[in-house]
Length: 124
Image 1 (cartoon, rainbow, N blue to C red):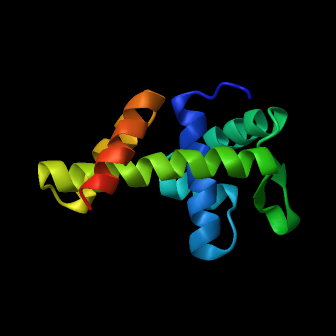
Image 2 (cartoon, rainbow, N blue to C red):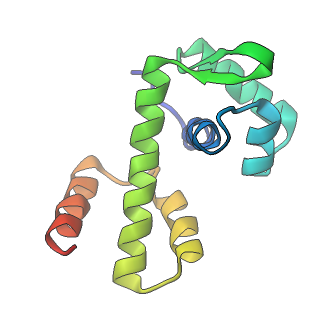
Image 3 (tube, one colour):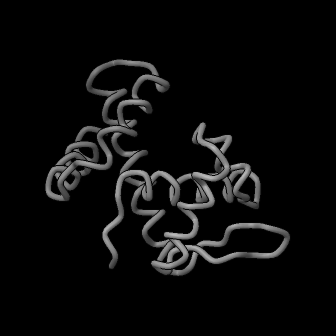
């Protein structure tokens, strides 16, 4: 598996979320969601395509490969877990928890994530 930088993970996650919300993800949608320029999305999609995570679909859509989908779902699951955890532990609203989860999700160790999952299961 190719190592992704934080921004690459953000792009994969955005494609997944957009596809789930709208049934389609296009570069312009990713740019809007992440608040970045279209050239930035184009460059990122080229890198993700080279690494086997994204392919071009019909009518300018972005499609996740099997590996891209697996990776995007893992990133998104970490994001959701951390958001719920922060809301529960810190008693903050979803918006604040989500913003912080987005920053934390890229740096958290797998064993820490697993520990949070276990804690959340025990304390649900």
